[in-house]
Image (cartoon, rainbow, N blue to C red; front, side):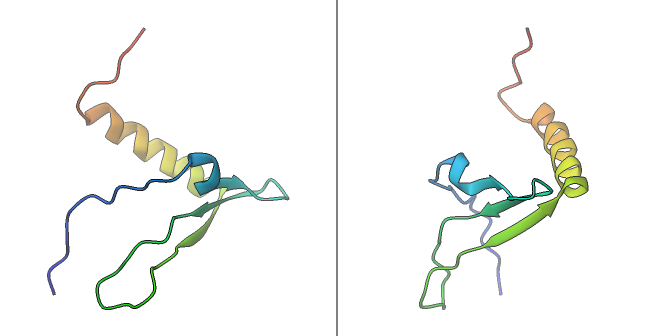
Length: 75
């Protein structure tokens, strides 16, 4: 099976995708439903992240962003 490497464009409001848990100890990410070949119903993904994982994600994203084009504008 060949993986499709086409970037997925998520057309969703960030405020709806990312929400803080009621206890303020985790963050929920809910991706909008998207079609998957061979599956009748669109796939919806729900993930809960703890604070350590959020910190790691932010660190990795900041490293990757610094390597992306166009370059990050600095003041």
